[in-house]
Image 1: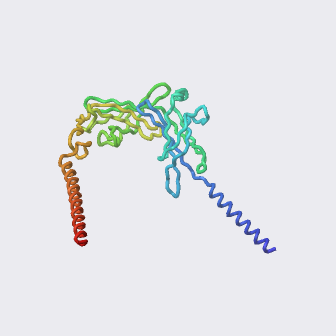
Image 2 (image 1 turned 30 degrees about the vertical axis):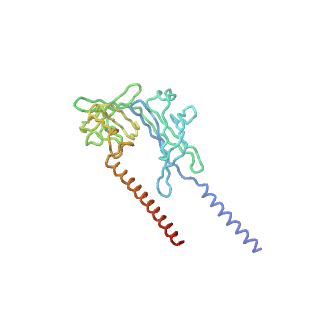
Image 3 (image 1 turned 135 degrees about the vertical axis):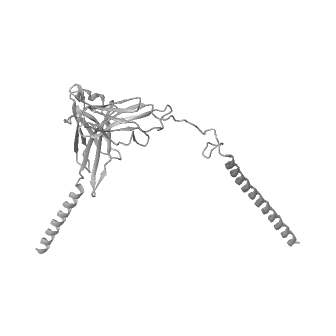
Length: 297
């Protein structure tokens, strides 16, 4: 009887251990999902979904998660904007298609919802962002003054908005450069900000043109808004090429004379040494043959 009791206890313990291991194996991480709205130059509109997960006490970006994008709170097939998969930065980008226009024009306020597909590691997750339709207007004057206006759509009219923080900068290849020492501006009661351009002698294109950009970033009401304008406030780039000149990194046949002389001198010296060694080897061989003949006699 005691043996049967011991066996029963062992079976029960093993069952509990197996269930515990199974529960740990099937436990899923909590996926954190968010979505941002972007309006570029009052023309291009798109959504960006972000995925991350807290693992070992640290947030990590989650790639390869399939995201479905919807317009309005109803995540039905009729409101589906499209699907995208997150990249190595945990981002999935979707351009808002023209087919969504009928739903977009219904109201001056919209809501976008994203839904992540369930997988072996994560459960299905939802997130949304409400957006009020808005746009930026940028104007410049001959004395290098920049004026930016923030407008919000209410019903069918565009109205000015005060108290909105934005940046005014010049687009560069490695990042935007502020037009002056002020990092951010806030719209006044007229819905505008004024900035003075203080980046004189900044290199532009061949015609001296620079691209100004005004942007609202991560606003809780309007999302991300940008507007651009090209201005002739830069210095002209004088393009020159060393294609036909002899330089250290020039094309074949156009390296510096001194470098070619050095290279050819080294090659010539090596060949002279090799020829000299071959001659010495022949002499040694002849001397050896003469010694053998004398020894025979």
